[in-house]
Image 1 (cartoon, rainbow, N blue to C red):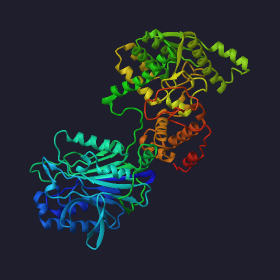
Image 2 (cartoon, rainbow, N blue to C red; image 1 turned 30 degrees about the horizontal axis):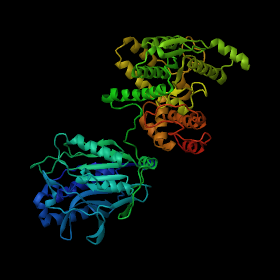
Image 3 (tube, one colour; image 1 turned 90 degrees about the vertical axis):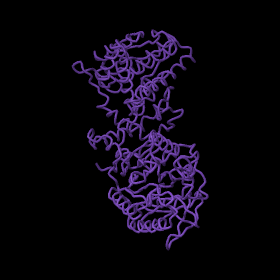
Image 4 (tube, rainbow, N blue to C red; image 1 turned 60 degrees about the vertical axis):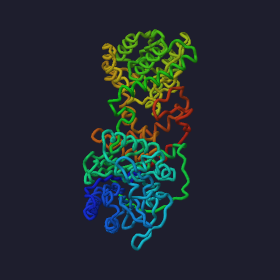
Length: 638
């Protein structure tokens, strides 16, 4: 339960139609296995104690009574185990039959969730047997106890803050206004569904989309357990597919047409933080809801759940073209609007032979295509200095010309030497003054050329650099429009690689591949034996780590110690724990100390869910203290 991770399971057990004793033992065996696996929330299918396909045998009193006795045995079996279990069965109340899910925890029957929406069409005739459930709970007898029965029941965990569960049954999800909508608005962030949904061609993808989208809309986890093999195949076949989704993403899914369990950790902490940020998700009224408390075993899990080590890079390669073109188009449309508004016909950008300026050039080319402008209006300026190598210089010269842009070369060596004399700086002292003076000289040149040519300076700095403050204030930090401002370094690389893979121009492709193979560097220090001496990732840390850190810190607001735990899982086999912790400390230290640069950022288009514009997405005080975050990291024992 540490960091909000709770292991949950969706189980489709082996059952037999109307064989309650067999089904009871099968369910007990499955429960015991899930306890061994560390599952805290266990969900079984609809009516699985009897089977869903009993049809008119639901009218047989012996079946209903035997199901209640079997439930009593399972409740007693659960004693001593702090988990919560959902099991479907038929229930007799005041001479009427109801389709319910029994909720069990540690030897107690906490309540019965009844089904509101009964299908009575096609192959389903539930209304022939069952009565429509009711929302507000009533008290019903269960041997020597009385328990709540209804739809509006919230199951609150007493020892896991903010863990609230509610449920619905099969068809309830498929209607226009599912009960789970009210449950979520009343505070439930984990929703369960005991289901018996038959399989036909095309239904799997529909079901997947329905559940993932529903969990996204409700900012919740959704645990769906479906009836499987063992149900009658007289007219229908049941595929037994279990699905566990969280906030729009399916985390785990069992094998279709096979009775099995699927389990994974859901992140309750993430759901709580998402709802906290989403101000349009308004907490509803809890009136009419009964609250039932339960307790879970406090265990620290070894996570089965995987975390994407490159959260900004599209993981569905089948949609690579669509996603990359979408990103490039958003960047280009932002620049297009700025050019039209200002009346500028030219763009000016510094071209270094590195990834960031390369992506900016690609965006400028796309923008000029949209506007129908001649690409000679793209004024690419290469400004070799003390650290420029032949490799980056050649790429900086060849790439713009391959696009038909205008290339201008202005060496900054002599002007910087003169500047050092003016400010009384020894050129042999290669410190921050030595480096930043070059960056500011380059920016001054670009700004003055923009005045000369009636153009706009296009910024090339990316999101990763800006989050870390790896930019010279009023140097590469400044522009008239920053097209890469919300593009992290890992995504910059992906976009350039995509362009290289898909362009028909082999010369451009070869240049881009060489740029991709070049170490990231500002090239502000003299080269060693003609090679780049100043490698950014040796100084500030690997960008793939920093992009993982910034995604989870800014997107969700996770604690540093939780991000460290996730990073260890995401980068297992790539980085040692000590290395991850080292650079995570660097990340937080730089993130807090460099906010003053982000507070003065120029305009730039928001592309993804994370941006750092001081006018909207990151309204952070420039003088905020890092103490709380660093103290959390200091408690970590590697």
